[in-house]
Length: 426
Image 1: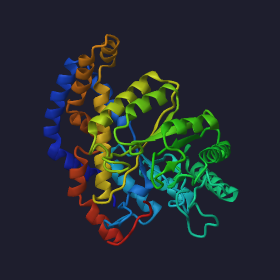
Image 2 (image 1 turned 60 degrees about the vertical axis):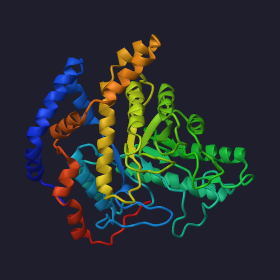
Image 3 (image 1 turned 180 degrees about the vertical axis):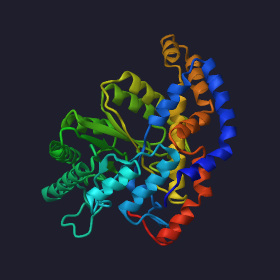
Image 4 (image 1 turned 135 degrees about the vertical axis):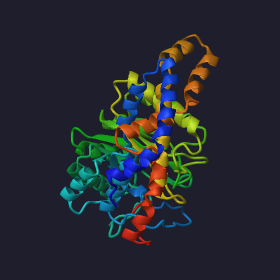
């Protein structure tokens, strides 16, 4: 499905008057507080979040998966869907591939299609958490940490293949997440499992091009429930340090126990120059992988406060890789991604409004009440006019969800692809 510029302009005309009045009021209010509105809009316009190739179709649970209809049945269709989202939001300018779900048949054709849709290739993701067809060794008891050298060698070879695929597409980073762990005490020797993992990661790291980064993800539990080999940010950081200066920790918002202080983790990693990537989602109980900002919007804002501070004050930390990692079991996947992008932009915009100098002074003076007032003052600000203006200035639409529905995008995709297509992915 192709969106024409005239269609978007017609949709914007209907809401332009209301947007202008809201934007003017917001601008006047913020300017009185010495906020450079144009600079905020510029940063919002530049902020791009990668869409994972596995998130364009309906997600699932251990109990079932319910297709939404019109799902992308190929990598080409996935890129086209991301192009639709990016056309509406101007925020989804990258795709993150998961191998072997999305191995290109024609690399030049895929790169050309991505360029047409103004999509770049973000981190490539390896998959050693499930067995693939005709796979010689099984990952039932782990991959990079497995007691079997043959299994470890197979998992290492797969990661090297993923690097090769990503290199052909212009990607510059590899994300490694392991499901390796144990469900029963005594099942694994903790030290042996960690040593195998470190050695395996080092071998993968040494195979990367010199301008590549490795992102090491962590998760406290699931699919195993007694222990996970890379269970927290400290283990990830330790493994990254063991690999080298181009290996970093990747933070997934859903990969924490309830009430974990994620903003503190983010801050420490940036101070040490070791925060490499960020996966956005939201959760109530565990790794729920639901719409960003739907459960804990204030927590997301507090995380962005530390991210903004780190980006301004920690030059030792590299430019971050941003990606949405969610499972859309009930919603239209594209609508869910659009809502996630909106929540990310709003949290980022609010964090940009924080008077960091005033906050620092209040912190130095131990003025706890004032610290809270400064943060909550920014959080309570309606920044939607700024987000909308950033979209307008870059060619997007004022209200992406409204436009998506009025253009009947899902209906058109069903007509083109059929009702029973199923996208590869989780």
